[in-house]
Image (cartoon, rainbow, N blue to C red; front, side):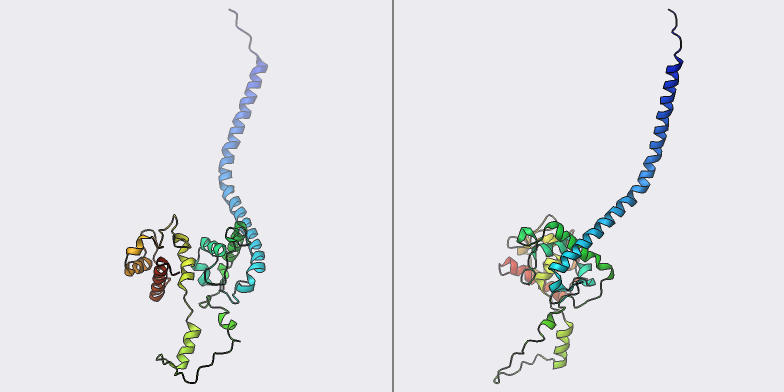
Length: 267
């Protein structure tokens, strides 16, 4: 059988395609490391820009909806100072969102989430929380952040006159000590502290979440002595962190008393 003559044109075409294919493979091999080098920076820039946009949107919402009580820059008027180191370092983003969403029972802070009858969407609440978090870097030290403006709000009230036939109560301290105690000792409200620090895991209503057990009327802790709850809050338990450096002994006792009151249906 006679051999077919070589097709030089076909061979040249095949060689060209092989060379183009090898070149493309080489470029792809270079592109992957370059992509891996540049992409993290691009994503970081995108996240930074998104955060800046959310923060700007959150400030607008904060000024229009929150500044009347919390101050134009979060410094507090007749509600807590939200730009303080104490609030921002002790409160996680999820807790800030929770406080805005459901409010603080027993205070003037109402729920702002649409799900709870408020005016804000979840995106707007997220934007406000991002704005508040942006204040943390330059947050002032405000040990009185819970009471900021509260004393001022009562300065103009007329003092209640004592009855002539009533004897003053002697608590063992002179007037100067009493005045200093009022000025220097912030009021610890266990319900507010629980919502700010504990509700993320144990639920606003103490019903529990995926991150922590319930502490309500049907909780296992109902059968535990108070000392066990004090120890759990102070030193932590399982995945629960220790709070002894955050709350004083008296504040932990107040938290336990609040939990017991909820379990008895009194709060």
